[in-house]
Image 1 (cartoon, one colour):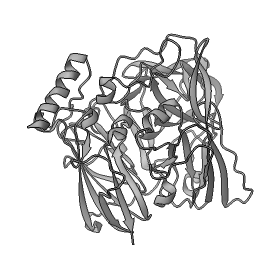
Image 2 (cartoon, helix red, strand yellow):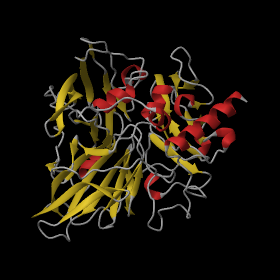
Image 3 (cartoon, helix red, strand yellow):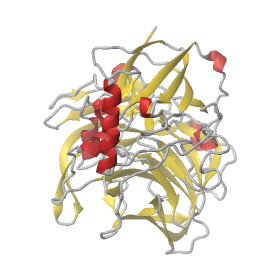
Image 4 (cartoon, one colour):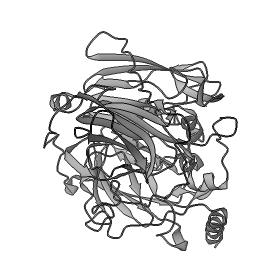
Length: 499
């Protein structure tokens, strides 16, 4: 009875306060009736996209910053050594109003770490903040001691030095803090960066590959800047309930950016680096584009889309063809129709004339390989969010797995529970230490652009998603909602993988 009363109060507060409630917009999961297969929503196969009103193009346009590639300090071609420094900084996002920020090796965000499959990697992570932090390699398959979860705190003035071998295929991953109860604030202030893996197969494909020219990283985040230009990470009721969503969209740390792109095909490595916002990306002229990669690597073949839904922490590699544009013509990347990044086409043509029809081989899923099926039920909103009815406890291990076992994880969004499981929020579910293949959404096959490796899976209210994975790395790991305010509130659990 107490739970029902609390849930009812939550709904009432959201309605009175004008907060958005994410209603489930699809029937039949990701099957043929999925919104988007006829030109509407496309991408996650689930979830409504409801966000606060955003007003982006209100200032001077600026060139898009391209994150630098972090220098490899080891000349050995099979080894890679890097140094990352978490530090405070200042950025002038609004003219004349410097913003206090966090960054890696700079004022805001961090450099791109780029490695090859098979590399032996060593990364020295020094904390020059005046508070503890961690650094999690999101999507990287490493042992728990190197994963950088909340158990791997880095105290001020100390250095953490994880070492591991890259044993997964080419992919666009990322890194960010994962300190208990502080992840949302640290990411919001600027601690995030891309982690790119190359391999022999991807290098042999005829894909755009000139970094910063026709292979461009896009870290998309929404921010709330107060009247003094500061990041307003002061959580109100709606922020606690829904996750913090700002009214200004940034790309690579810039507001109102433009980027020059060559005629021809251009590759964009797109990360939703926001704390909570779900984006619906499209081009302003409704031009189609192709998705070639998901969270954990390339798809088997390019998938033609008119728009793409990405929840917090999801990545997508996209190809946009600018070959029909005249020099100086522009088109914009939009979120639900709102433009926030302008592409300016130059006269020079670069890259392949045609996309490869086949990209990589992804193994066929055999459910009989699974030794176990585990159920994860996400429920609630705000401070009452849970997984399987429990909130995060650092002293409790929620699940115990065996090394090298293949398991099916059944992830359900219980919505508002007794108030109706089709009401509530969509939750992006993230599992550490492995990559998943989605088996089905409510019994229907995933859409074509979700048939690749995934580490973050958006689940709509009332929806059940089944995914399969093999756990080849031992240690302690996390699973959680990747709405960072929900994670910080306790929508997270721990699992171990042991021999």
